[in-house]
Amino acid sequence: MSANLKQDIAINPESNPSELTKMTFLTIFSTPKPFTEPHINIIQRNAIKSWQQLGQDVEVILVGEEEGMDQIVKGFGVKHLPNVERNELGTPLVSSIFRLARDASTSPFLAYVNADILLFPGFLLVARQVAQQSSHFLILGQRWDLNVEELINFDEDWVARMRARVNRHGKYHAPSGSDYFIFPRDAFAEIPDFAIGRAGWDNWMIYHARQQGWLVIDATPSLMIVHQNHDYHHLPNGQPHYDLEETKLNAALGGGMANMYITLDANRVFEDGRIRRPGISFVRVLRTLERWIQPRDDIHQGIRYRVARRLRRLRRKLV
Image (cartoon, rainbow, N blue to C red; front, side, top):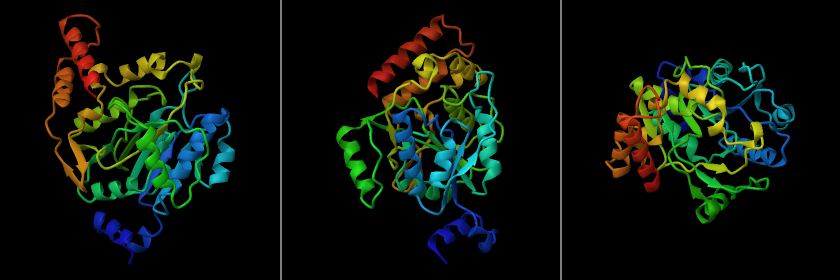
C-alpha cells in the first residue's frame, strides 16, 4: 500500500481502500479571467500547469465560461464547469463557484486558488499534514509578487529556478489579501452571493471560519506561493477591484468592515510540520486593537473610526 493511501486511510479510517484509489485527495478549483489578453493568457496557463505538477492526488477544476476557456480545458485536460451563476453585472458568484466545485468533486479536501498563482509541491504536503492534525480548519497564507512575462518551462528543475528567481526579484505581499484557501469539503456550505474577483469575499472567509470555531491556519512560514503580477485591464475602466461598486456590495454582504479579516487574524500558524499558536508581536497586537475598535456600523466618522484608521495605517507601515 502506498504512503499516500495510508495517509488517506488515517484521515478517514472507515473508508474502503478500493474507493480511496478512485478519488483524489485535493481538488483545486478556480475562476480564470478571459484568456484573450496575451499576458493574462500566459500567467494563467503557468498557474494551471503548476497545479497539475502537484501530481495524481490533485484534481483541477475551472469554473466559468470566459472567452478562451474551452481551448484551455481541452489543452490541459482539466474538468470544466461552465454553468456558474452571475450577478446583474455578469460577474460569477462565489456561492455558485463553491457549490459547483463541491458537487463535481469527490476529494475530501478542496482548495480555491486564484488563477494567477503558482503553486509548488509543498502545497499538497501542507494540506496533508494539517488534515492529519485537525478536522475543522482553513489554511491560508501570504504570497510573493513576481513579474512573469513568459511561459514557464516545467522541467524537473523548474521549482528550484523559480524559487531562486523569487528570492532575487520577488516582493513579499502584505497580509491584507488571500489568494488561496484549503478546507474540508463540508466547510463553507453556505456563502453569501459575493462577486468573485472583487475585494471582501476572501476577508469574510477568514471571519466566518473564526466564528465557526475552526482553526484558521497561516501557512506562510511553510508555503511559498507566487502571484504573477498583472494590470487591471480586465476590470471595468481598468481600475483596481478595491474601487468597484461590487467591492462595496461584497463588504456589505459580509457584514461590514468589522468582518473583513486578514491573514493576521489567523489563530494558528503552520511551521515545521506542526500547527501552533502564533507568537505575540506588536503588529498582531495592533491588528487586534484595530479589529476591536472598528465600528460595526461602517460609519466613517467618530472617534472609534478615527482610531481604527490610525491603527491600520501604523500596522501597514510595519509589515
